[in-house]
Length: 253
Image (cartoon, rainbow, N blue to C red):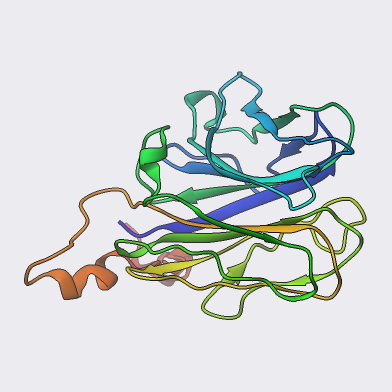
């Protein structure tokens, strides 16, 4: 089954920050994915990201910024029944009160179900730095093509501006950029089934971190045999045109 990015929402604050979808109600069978960047005068990490019903996302990978005061984290969970048909609210809790944080939450369909680290393809690659220019590429290889590959960028703010990796990457439109406190974004594309590359560029010095990993797809995945060449056709993202015009033309019954 092909993956499809459905919607996202983001916000800034500190521990206790809430983010709410505003575009559409959440759907059954989708995956909720959160990226968090936070920092404090002392080391702070993500304690939890939960919905209003208390359902907690699974931590899929985290890194500590180079100066030891902040972190960048990727979390996800299957959309709980309590969130289906509503615009859910997600609450971030950090291990250290105060400080600052930014959070981006996505809803994506077509991904493997489950609330353990088995939802991702291997172990996330991470890298940190503090210099302006092009970020170092994390060391990561996906095992299968056409998975939902993400590269997460987060920093300690300082009002710098990042530029997302170029096509075929897509930067999330609700990523937080040029913030005094924290920047946070997920860029995404099809995985290649091999060594992956994805680098941001930044226009100033700041403590930053990048995390890369692919989410597995739902349904069977072709890894060998005569049908291997069909994998990208079967699982490539698709856009279904509206049927309203067809119906309005008098073809509905």
